[in-house]
Image (tube, rainbow, N blue to C red; front, top):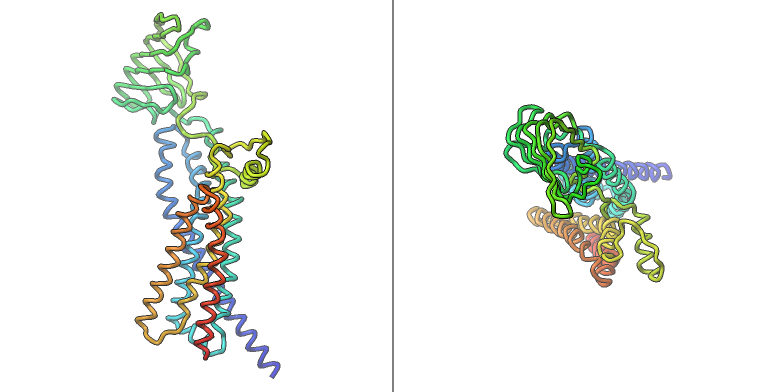
Length: 389
């Protein structure tokens, strides 16, 4: 008898391991498939770094790869929902669920298994959103700061104005390989002061050259004129046969300041602490704007509170396990509970943006999964008990 009970226990462990493995495999496959599709679309948008901003190909690829972590994190809840649904459908089609029920495996144990797996997915989401993603995004921003322009060739297009650099406007008439003709440059931010005498007080300047040769991030201008408008309202004109423009230290229009989603979680928490508990203190955390604390709270909610909705999804999908004789009704139930779970994730994504607007919005977003979970779980267990009777 003892041996028989031991064999049943081992069999059930194998069943649970099998279901867990199937679910995790489906989750990983769906997660990376969706992430790669979204990343491909995003990577196309990042091509502007090469085409419009002059960064190297290697900088583009590294920057794109670092942004993949953010995409993966966002797809975790949806991937888990799809993996749960597909796993249940697969087990039903292969009659494996029927074998489980007839062998004495209770449905609530399968639900508990789904719930337990959802807790591991929750921890994975929190780890990714609080540590991996902010670190990777911060490194991608640092990469843009530290990487110089690879070439200005792509920035200069014939018969078109270019404002890739702040305060500078370019216009060229012709372009053949690295040779440009009839170049017009308008400088409104004193970026090119090194071309003028030291005593110059120019407000802005205009440069015209008949010809220019591009060498990576430099342009050698030939046969031109520099016209500067001085602060004393005089105009100075300087003619040159050849001069060099170096773009290494110029600031292009790519955003280099660290955004709130690229800020570490520790700084976010420190910012919230200073806001709520140290209001008298002059302490200030960079990249956590005190004048717009709502965006900080939203970021915190997205990283720490949104994953709380994942276990709720596991309970909702488990309603599909409720027995129905009618095959058509069973299919309808799949659509209903998948739809409800999907709507839940969409609402969680939408409402997180309002969590920072008011205290009521924040606590509503925080407490919803904690209040809904026991109610749904109790209702589901009651349904399973009625089936046994």
